[in-house]
Image (cartoon, rainbow, N blue to C red):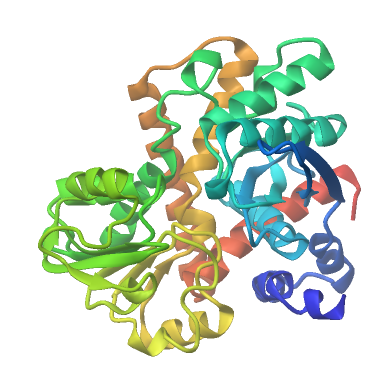
Length: 416
């Protein structure tokens, strides 16, 4: 148990302690903020295609609901464990507060490899998971969404199972659903679009010209593709991308749409015509102006941080930079738009979807995009202002901004 405690969750809480020091918070308040409200661990027996039953372990963690229902994705990945889910739920509480949506933090996951499962197996797994956690979720309790290894179709199965259990249609129980069952326009590209708006603000604040800027992206899934496209349209050069199997590098720049088509066809960006092969981690240390880690956590570490050449890092992944590496980057003068701000576009449009579901009235693409731009621009400016005011880095400033909002809510409710 002690081994697990010192891993990702303890690392995640280091930023909370830094923010607490700036805000002069008492130790009992820090303890209340450090403790998840609820942890669910469920067993999900699934009949596999070969007729055998396999039991999967699922998790759902609700971190802090002082500002509203828990909110956060469901991850299907072989590495899913309680420590990871707790960390992600905590980050969601912070992220939701940073961007100003009225939610607490939630996260879920199942330890499995969705790439090795058929559609039928994934559907049975999802329905089993929905049934196992149904009592603890709902539009006023906890609102899941997709994450690594899950998608809109999985949200559809989850919603259907929940509707059967509660005996009515409750579209606000889950977000990033297909449009045909109450999804929001703009949700598919929201994380990338939000990160793009944050990058525009960061480029202005830190005087980084975007035309001709060289961009390196680690990860090339649903989160990275939209920002690659938007930055390319602005005149940036996409010089490196990678996925779990390898990467592609071309200092002259690559077309992000052609890259996406190549990956859809071959299931990898490795071997993209005209590019040099890279490993999955190499984009971190490529010569570039803007680095976008958009894969998994703990990718920029004390082992490779000295090789980082970017002037600006926009963290689209959750927790891609370890605290040790973060400190070194800060000392090197590298500017960072932290994950809890940079990738908050997804949860912001999920919030818009929840609002639309609850009022039964749906917005146009333009309306969603304009509201997302406003939310991300305001969030960046709030964090930047806090950084200037306290003379602290952007990550600490994001946590200070968020923690203050959460503490204010907890005090208003009499919880601390």
